Length: 457
Image (cartoon, rainbow, N blue to C red; front, side, top):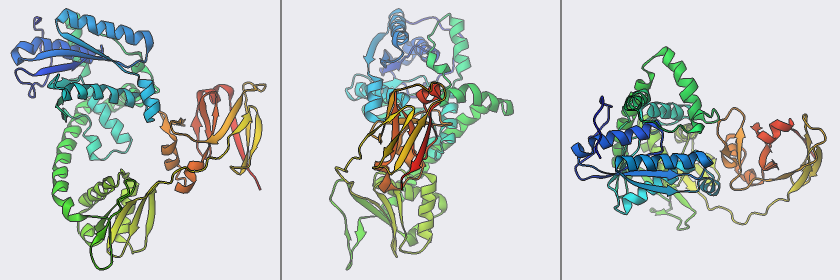
């Protein structure tokens, strides 16, 4: 049922068309509630067929149950069809070695994609705001994103079977909340939005207010940067589509002419003639190198891209390991990227039990490990010294989110041939120590745990 219009709330409707079956993703928060209310105001004018979509992520317990009930009752009050989808976010995060936030986002969009692919909907609208865009751009900038990352959240995304739309992407969160208060429309507050353990929350509550002291329009400016970066990226992608076929060569050159390529599914290689690469401007050269790496299933960071730039400008015979099973080779005429076949059934090292406090001689690792505690010197629970496993995650000191052990070892620049045997210490269900890394854990912090290592002769 359409409701009386109040003072206008900015919304972009360019992508809507009469008869569009539009799913509205509603979590219960202010942004998504406002999006639903605004679209209900406009549904007759725009000719939309609305459906409320709510995902219960299986976390936050009773609070999430109350959110789901709130959204269902709001949909019923507004006369809009309601669909609820239950997922197990924690199981997904564990299985796929993802953060909880990443797992939740992928599960949401997987459901949206299914609804579109099954032709149940034509589009799904999410309530991302200009503030979300600014936070995303800052987050990507701090993590070292390239220009495609600075594009942030796209206003329209083509999905299999339909569109993902962000009609509030130029609307401020403060405008939304003021509009809802004017309507007398309540909303739900997610308690995790104030948790400073999440980097996005610290950007929202700490960093952006500081930046606003230098420029009160910082949120709008970051939104403008995202728009510029998006358009720039679209231009460059068209350029790459045009140029790459003449620049990238499959496999490796063989004597007498021609090229050979491995047919093993775990192996791949691509090459670029160095003279052609050198002739390109640096901006295009970097993009070509990154596109070449994608052909062998790897994403280059900035330092690795600069390393390849230097190899192309250097002498033949250079070889560098970019990551486990990914190598770069400089031949007299080409720069080659190679993904090697991975080793199978690598022998595992034994596990050792370490009393806390206490010590253990781990001959397989070549050291003695000593554990001391400050807060409870009579603690008797034991820890396990072992190699890392799939699914292990740790929180590095000064890092906001848990990281995969693989990412930590890459940051430590551990040689590729040593990574599978790199030791970790597990205690009370957490990784509390990794060799050569400074990490934080709740169990270690409570006990005042200190771990020392002594090399064996």
